[in-house]
Image: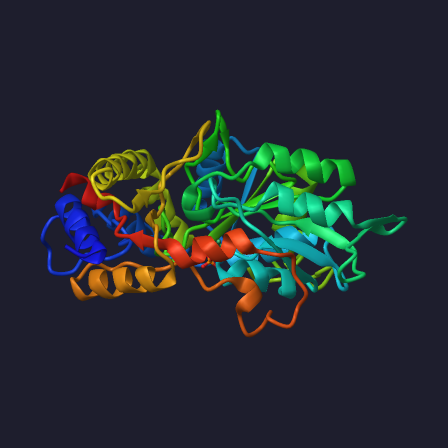
Length: 385
Ligand SMILES: *Cc1c(COP(=O)(O)O)cnc(C)c1O
C-alpha cells in the first residue's frame, strides 16, 4: 500500500466510517441552546449583559488569570493586547512565520510591522534560539532594543502555541526580560494547555485566546484578553468599549477606542461551552492517544505528541511525513478524496502576499514543518468512535 493509503486507513480505523469527517466540528448540545434562548428572552443580546461577566470570570478562573476581558474575536484581542503592551507606529514585533495570518494582521493593525522568526522542531512554537539571534545582533538605545535588520524598535514578542502544543515559554519570557521586551502570548489555539500547572496565555504580560467556531471552545466568534495586571485589565476593558466614561446619561469618551466587546448572545453560548470544556479536553486526549497508538504501526509517519513537561489540549491532531512536500500533497489528496478533511499548516507568513517584502530571520525549521505536516480530523466527538 502507498504511504497515503496507509494514512487513510489509519485515520479510518480511529474515526470510523462516516462519509465525511470534518477537521474540527463544534460540539453544540442542549445546554448551549438553553443558554442562548435564555439570553434572547432577556433581550440583553448585545454588549451589555450578565453572560459576558460570567464567561469572563469562568475563563479567567479556569486559566488561573486575575482578569479576562471578552472581545469580538481573537484578532481584536491580540491587536488591543499589543497596543496595551506599548507597541506603536514604527515598531517591529517578533512573530513566528509558522502561524495563522491573524497573528501578523494584529501586529499591523496595532501600527507595527511583523519580523518573522523560525520555529522549534519539537514544540512547533517560536524558536527561542531564533529570537535570541535577533536580540544578540540588536542595538540597545534609550528608546528600546533596535532590530539590526530593520532599524526599528522591537516593541513586543508574540509567541504562539501551535495546534495547542505549548512552546518553551518560560525560557522565552526569561530571554525577553533580559532585554526588557514585553511578551504577548497568542494562545488562540491552546485553551486548556499547560506547562506544569500554569496555563498557556498567562506567562506574558498579556495573553489572548480565541473562541472561533473551529477552536476547542466556541462562542461563534469571540476572544479574550488575559492579564494579571489590574491596570492593563482596566485599560483593556476601557479601550474595547469605546473608552466611555461612566455617567448616568452622558456620552463622554476620553480617547479614540474600539467597539470590540463580545455580545452577550455569544457569551451565553460560551458559558454553556465552558461547562463542557473538561469533557472536550478529556475526549481530545483520548482521540490523540488512539491516533498515536495506530500511527505507531505506520512506518515513515510520526504522530505529533505534546512536548515533554507540558499538557496539550490537542486542539488539532497532526502527523509528520518523512518525505517532503510532494508526499504531504499526496496525503492531502488521498485523505480529502476519502472524505477525511485534512489540512496542511497555513502558508508561512513571510511568504504571504501582504508580508513577503518584509525582511525576516532565516526560517528553515518552519519551512520543513510546513512541508511535512498534515492536520487530521480532531473533533472531540471522534474520541467516542
Ligand atoms: C484562531 C487564531 C487567532 C484568532 O482568531 P479569530 O478568528 O480572530 O478569533 C489568532 N492566532 C491564531 C494562531 C489562531 O489560530
